[in-house]
Image 1: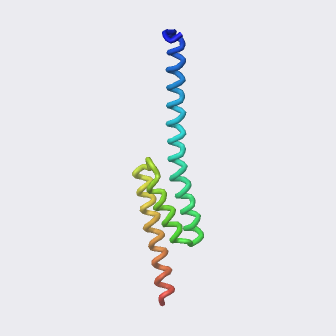
Image 2 (image 1 turned 30 degrees about the vertical axis):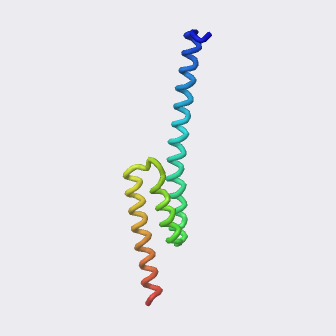
Length: 94
């Protein structure tokens, strides 16, 4: 049975299937990480809770395998939120 070519083929196909299933799940988790933090950041931003928005955007930057475009988007969002936050501080000081 150890030298049976059919068993070897079936085991090889099973290993390939397991590998591809595992990598697909990892990619999905990585995508969900970015989406989750960015969405939470957007919600906080819309609610004018700027400190928490920045925190969530920063968290999204540490997700594995985010693209350069996603990182630039986060940097832009953080800069925009910082502008909003500083304009509120100026108004409250006056």
